[in-house]
Length: 305
Length: 253
Image: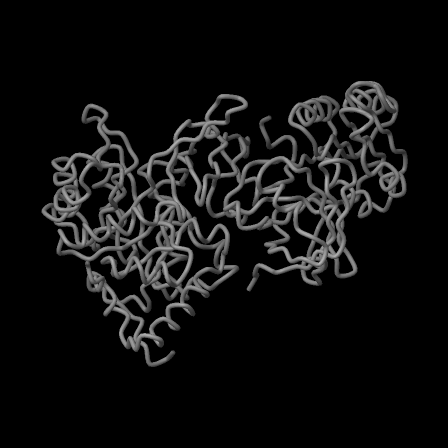
């Protein structure tokens, strides 16, 4: 096991292994730290923060679906200033890379947050462009390539940290958005965010989520993630953090083969809070079986028919 | 490090139709379990998420929980045979706080009575207990509660057994002449609302155990929210981590 090099250089940052956590599933790490030390992860993606504190949506915020869940938490978070002052210093003491996820309502908000986060010990900033509605006629940021380009360019200009743009799967062409982010100066991409979904209780005829609709995650979305990571890796030149339904070491390998350099665990940790430990063991077994000595060999190594 | 555990189901009883009484083996959970805490249970392969189920009793290397079959998950769980194994995460959450209370009172409704059993035992069998059920056919654990309480009043909403009417009304009448130092409660939302209002109206400290659909169960994912007023501010708190037991004055119902 020890003769396999698990480390990955991602945007110039050394990750001791390619496993990170998906924003929004992991809080700020303190709860999961009771099940597996945060230093086990190559990096941790923190709960999405916004310019100001947000209370989040009304409950119920979760609904179970076949092989997955719908959620509508609504970005409940303490705001970027409280994060930078109270939470980030604690995370900085841990031997892992912190990727801070942020969401804004306007380009100005994104830029302000990027400036604040640039003065913290965050390893990278992940920009969520999949959630919010903006003043651009109510269009979501993440679905319009021109907006994605402009937003990325503006934020990159003020960010002193590597900028990862998180892509939505709720688009006609994910590669158009990926290329727009790349043109805007993104250092990396992460995908996929959740797929917009809905569940109706047939007895009450009401949606199960108080917010009516929510984001689908879990094994149900994995094939979509694999396909979109593959397409994006083919089209773009910048590295990818892959995520979507990872429940095992085999799933991590699959997303890497599709083109991911790092892979995030998310919903799977709800079932197995120490999933990281099994995933690493299974990856080592796979590498041993196929004689892989460096984990980065796997990125994009799919052999297309 | 905390971890999940494969626990052997050593005793299984369907106490009334659709309600199952499970006893599992686990030294660690048995030792750690506090009244009001819950287990996050992987019911089987058909359902994805774990299901939070409150601890009814614990001790001597075993843990007991009782649940009603309500959907796919609990259906699957109820199919596990004696001798089978169940993957359990727990004990989790913030349970009932037991301080030096005078005349503690416990009130539960329906399947909300189960977490109150260990509480009644931990209170030294002195608490006065009020338990409400829909009708006579749904009355459960009557003898067991009587053995671990001072006075024990059973009521039914339709009057088919015991006190006739909502059990919160029985409690309200009782405390007029018999002051109590604290009220502990778990049950359906309308009952909790009534108990909260009665307790606060009488200036009695009150601890309520709440229920919500959960994700991770450990406080990270923020899906099992309940509305609270804390330090003068409205905010959502996590039922799995800040609760499931809350001071009634904190929660908005």
